Image 1 (cartoon, rainbow, N blue to C red):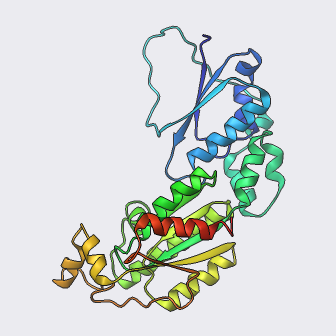
Image 2: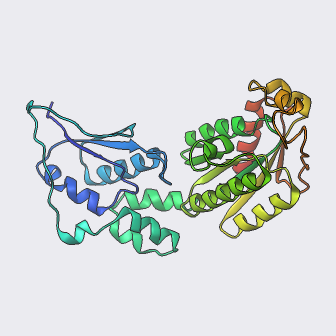
Amino acid sequence: MSKRAIFVGRWSPFHKGHLAIMKKKIEEGKPLLIFIRDTHYDIYSPMLRKRMIEATMAKMKVDAKVIIIDDIESINYGRGVGYEINEIEVHENIKRISATEIRAMIERGEDTWREIMPEGADKVLEDYLSKGLVVWFTGLPKSGKSTIAKLLASKLEDKGVNSEQLNGSKLRSTISKELSFSKKDRDTNLERAVYLSKLLTKNGAVVLSSFITPYQDERDRIRKELEEHGSFIQVHVKSSVENCKLRDKDGLYEKAEKGEIEAFTGVSDPYEEPNNADIVLDTDNKSMEECAEELNKFLETVL
């Protein structure tokens, strides 16, 4: 078996500049091994990036293995052990091609990004961009919002539909680390969630956003803002406080009842049930899997 030439990158998205770096080895007939860094901040999932690269390589009839790897801190090597380490020189015009600029073109609604993406990758991204949708899950804490979103994401992936999941825990462990649970900070966290949802849906993602959003006026505001940027579906994950407590392995309800957590929805803060949800999932009387499948079938009319 011939040795493979390794290339490592984000490839977000894969463009002609990236392909130019691989050109010499492709022309030599070398098989490629392409690693995709599984970064957690890119708007395009590593699986989508993998499909873009594979589509281009298939069009060019290149023997290429494309593998998603953990993000890397550094590339280290010692003495030579039988392989080359090359810095690839490309034409100055190619160097100016930027994945950041491609994303900006898409954000601005321009079509010229297609001209700087290789054949195959452009079609994968175009198909992806046509499926922008925000599915906004609202419900009491521990009602099953994130669980259903995770199950739904798996079902969508099986159908070749890429999705991105957003929830309070994910944001508070990353871009909202500094926020407390005060009303002001919760509003700020929601603003960030809406912004990310808009950004992702403008780039074609099916965004599964799971946030308590307890007040009707804030849900109406979010619906109006997101509908201006694409399709929007509001899902009410309905459950009684009693059943939410039974699912609460973190003991949040107990802490709230003891006064250790202030303004906790369902205990010391109200939850206003939606009056205009597009679909209601009853997790008191159906399993999480049943609810995920119910939503999956509902979305088939949209996707």
